Length: 406
Image 1: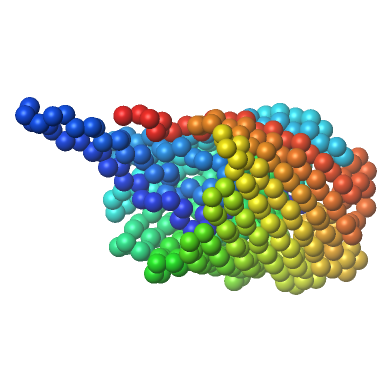
Image 2: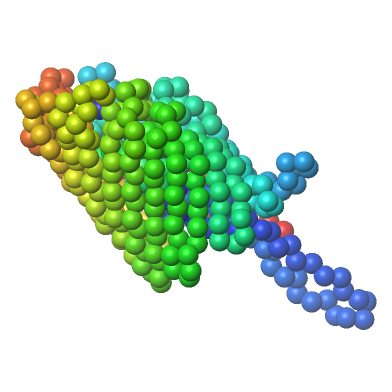
């Protein structure tokens, strides 16, 4: 089963990174006025957070020939306990889950974004992979890095290693409602390399189009697009992507799905303490014997994410999802879910969360149930247990600018 790791950019999230430092000289004859509050740097303008965690404003400094840089960092630990573990996966484990730095130049005609360090991408129904092996087998120590070329006020060109435009969840743990990504997310790509154009179309509509290498294949035959309609607390997104060619090349980061196409529709309501986000997703892997697909296979499903923020830094996100695949174990269909061809899966995750400043702690309580599975391909020592329960803890620190600094 492919352990798909992130989707980090569907639409630009946040304002431009300009810092307005306010000051003014006072004449001796004028009584001293109350000093204006220091301006607070905006969050990283290319960084997407879909859940209740709050990112600190970046530290900003002049880096000489590199321009004015905005910098954040994160350091998190991870602990897991589970029953019916997959062979080779421990029932209990603890590790560093993230140690990353985020650097952005968000002014001028040539801008850039760099995300570097170690990371994990825990996913329901899949054996946990530690940070060292994740970095080695997926996107390397610099998973996201690209140039941004603004053209006027409404158009941007991006080129480099980019977050996917597909799906409702992002790649890295701290970006999402829950620590672990779901089985619907696990069908998508996460990082792709290529060229992207972002365009603002009026007051409520924005769109992005990308020519890229799909599931990190280094074969540039993919077309991806995303359109977002936002008005008040409501947001409606359509994402679509597909391979216009064919790719036999496969790795951990480039599964057979690299020859598929996919559509997703995402609605989000954000108001007061509530975030409610249901979405639907469909993918199709067409018949193509040359790339190892003797029978066309599809995956259809969806999920709903809900989060409520209590007082004093507490919040409770929950996610429920269902995903089913076509075909059977005897007709040559590809095993898209990992539970066997033609299988389906249901999951439920609750993630009680507490954050104060740059510190946060949260826990996933997650349940996965497989149906129509092939014996030997699900959970437990013999691969015949249909259910798995996990309890996961993530504790971490977000680094940036203290908003009380003068």
